[in-house]
Image 1: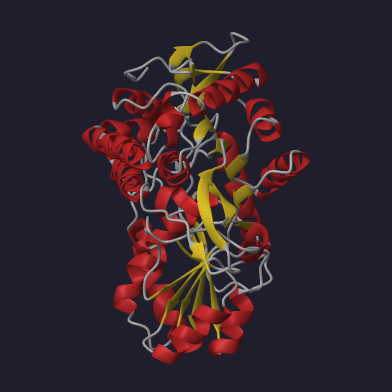
Image 2: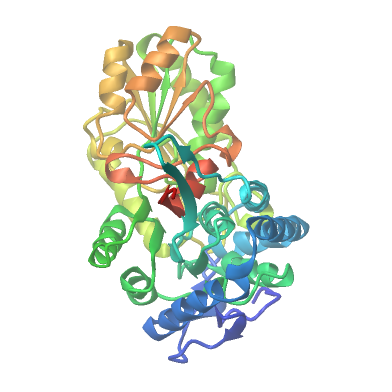
Length: 484
């Protein structure tokens, strides 16, 4: 069993690491080889209730008494400690998620940057004065919601903790974090780092456990004033329905089927790394993965050929070996992806390229060969449904109108990329694409901590990242003062 430098079978409530109220644990499986990695606490409704009450007490105590500037300095101290431990966090992510070391380290650096950004912004969120009737002074105040709940997924735990918990703490909320049961080591590590940096007890509480136990309890708790959820569409609906019974706001970041659109005038040398990497990063287990590549017909064959060459050169292996592509998170996820590949074979989708799985991979590992399929019709299931694996489909188009029809023709709307040298087309496409983010001659912008992120349609609603997250994790109060 791999060495983990802290107890994993605990919840963090009020600054104390203790066993779950029910005394039960859950196995944490290493996706690289199928071995038992650790036991984690099986938190439940009683733990969630204790965490919410403790968070409320923190708001009324030491945490709530801090000024915005003091909160910012605390976040900056946590950021510095995350950077100091970036290599260890990357190792934990490799074992827990199956994420190659270079990708895990990038996530740790992103977590530190989120905390740095929000730490610097904490005392810079201003209200406004409003011109109003004679004899009045009117103004607005930004105030924390109170206790905020954060349900984060297994694919990018560090980044999503940074963008949601970081912003919530910056605005003075007290947080209850429910990490995914499939992968929560970096979330637990973050709790220790925050304590070491001096975060007051109760400002951050962490309750691992099953989604339909701890997650459901957090979603429905009447003491929670705001929920942030990242995950599947189906679970997002349940979270939103539970929150609606308490009439509280919810930020949902759900699935995606994001396109990159390549026009004939694009700089293909610049585009090619983004076209492939945005589809296979974290073994394709990314909500904003570029799982659809739309290519204008005059350059279609060239783009497919060049992408195929890159696919055949991909290295697949255990995450600690730092390959291009590691394993999927679980045997269940591998079965889902293999099911889609079976559909591709059964329906005769052309196989453009497939990376080789090397001999000697651990037999218990959750590996799937990265697969490129082309050409694929826009109405095919593999072009419509989120696969969440290292599978990309390539589709030809003729002209802007058809590109927009295909790009907008799914139930999702998270991210899109457009590759063209035509400045007018860049703006036309950006305005007409139905999604939350559009990248022109780029994809992802290196994480874009400062850039508001979220979707439309079944990709969710609300925004995190950037200053929009600070607004989302606060409420607006209007004050009108009548003069004597």
